[in-house]
Length: 332
Ligand code: ACO
Image (cartoon, rainbow, N blue to C red; front, side, top):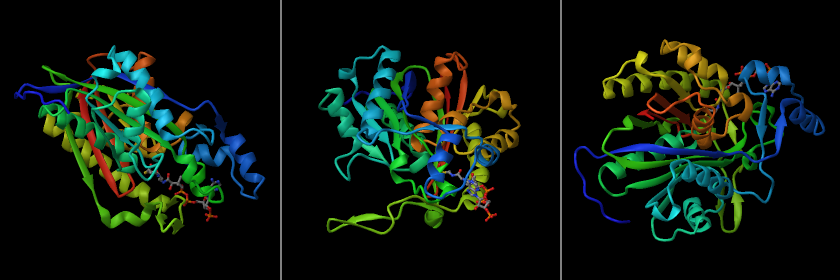
């Protein structure tokens, strides 16, 4: 990593966003028909009523997280008008890495053809992007990096139990990315990260590689109601805390982008923060829950559609397995 000088007015700012969804899109009806063939009953009505999800994208078997990540990264680099060769930090947030090791970030680096810069993964499940962005911001502010690619990429379809209707209807695949650059004016205003390992069991993939075999269940397990209850509480608390840190109030937030898990969690978070639902960015209906990819995917779609504009204040909030949670408040 190239050393950089630090100063108290060194900040970080998002200069470009990008995303990528694998082309295969499954509506609830299509997924229900596929599950019915295995004797699993569900319906578009149940999924929409309980989650707000209407469709999700699934990657083809030969497509990995690094493939989705590279496609999203290229779009972000193009939007930022930044040459990949000038990137000095790559962080990939993922819970579905291509390999046990090396990191997906190293594979992304290889595919972008930019050897030399620091590259590593962050594992904080659905809070991964908020964790990765906070780390990149800290590294830029201390001078350890000046142009970072921060990516969330997942192929959650690989770890779903298609015999468990309570979880397999919730998730999808995709990737989102941002270019974060050193700046004299603050883009990232404040951030905060948390975890509570006492709740490991309510959302996990317990399987692990041992002596050439997988020991334990390699598919996602979730206690949905327990996750729901925890998520709503922590998302409110961390939002208030980050706003306070930045010296801003609820009314300063132009857009709220919570991790896209379930429309009911998103709406209740917005309501508790007294934000009108028009300020809530929702993509869970079209993407499902794409874990670490959901926030940068939602950000990119909203920027590209013209909804989120330069100068807008955006509150990003992650929550996920671990249990982990966190928030980043930023001016775009
Ligand atoms: N289709 C039809 N029926 C279903 C389905 C389905 N896909 N899934 C569950 N059911 C049934 C259950 O079997 C149960 O039936 P029963 O009453 O006869 O036993 C009934 O629906 C209710 O089940 P609950 O699990 O109590 O349903 P709930 O209202 O809690 O909704 C849900 C479940 C959607 C999972 C909800 O708890 C939730 O969204 N939780 C949060 C999950 C989440 O956000 N996870 C991700 C966050 S972190 C991360 O992203 C990794």
